[in-house]
Length: 361
Ligand code: OGA
Ligand code: NI
Image (cartoon, rainbow, N blue to C red; front, side):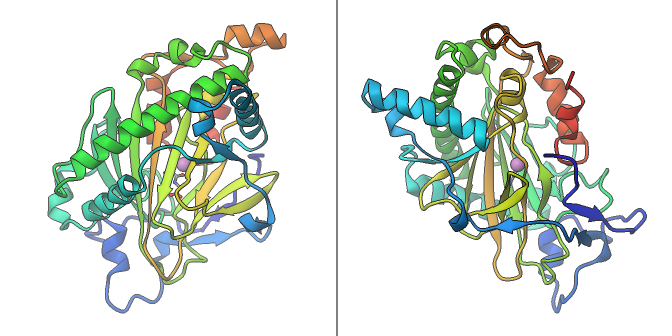
């Protein structure tokens, strides 16, 4: 699944960000821009197969059946959830109870942050990967050979809630959204525990979700004059257990399924959910974190917000001994403290599943 890089790095030896540029927004808005700087140029691989979501049926999980279905409906949805995790590592969650207006305000709030004058974002720029509020451009410009066509804002929202003070109202909105998302993630993880044949509260307890880390990662992809040469985000998997993704309706996300890239828009008002590396470790590879990437376009700004739900920072995550017992299997991954993994994941290059691959036994 992870053998071939989807995009080959161009031969540009060691680019630096064009002088004085701290955001892709500034480059994208420069007057008369018709081509992209060479530091952003990737070479597409000719072998990529991309299919549209209409050609393939994505798993859909009705969240309301987990919380208020009959016992029969619940056991069916737990089964479907397990199947979605095993076959795809990705699904669309519907009837999740997060109000559409809250999702919209969250996206508007993030757009408001990216639109702030550069000097107002300065205090959050760069610094350490585990800083509670951090914004920047590309993914990790200090280690990348070619930069990605995006700006980001990362906020730790649990166990301690943080928020930039601007734009007005953003703090209330993101607190509301992060609470609702966390509630849904914990409920899904109960169903996922059950689908693995474990007690519903297994993941909650084993990974100390009460103190679980929640990271909001907002992505800003402005229009790009040569979208076929640039990348928003390369093929990667996420850290943590489950990531929820919402976006402003502009397409760009592709998920890998059976060797093909599937364009994903979702269905209106659904939340896109994908499995992260730590659920792969805990389930001993039964459920795999899914590879996904973000493409850019030349027409409209795309904004997406990924919210990752993880264990508590000091939890050592390893394959669940109870599961190894049930499945009569040996552990296929070395245990690692979540904090340690996160630091590696965030300070490394974003490259397929390179961090997780190091833990395989
Ligand atoms: C991410 C991510 C995809 C997107 O932030 O981890 O995969 O569509 N985002 O922006
Ligand atoms: Ni991701």
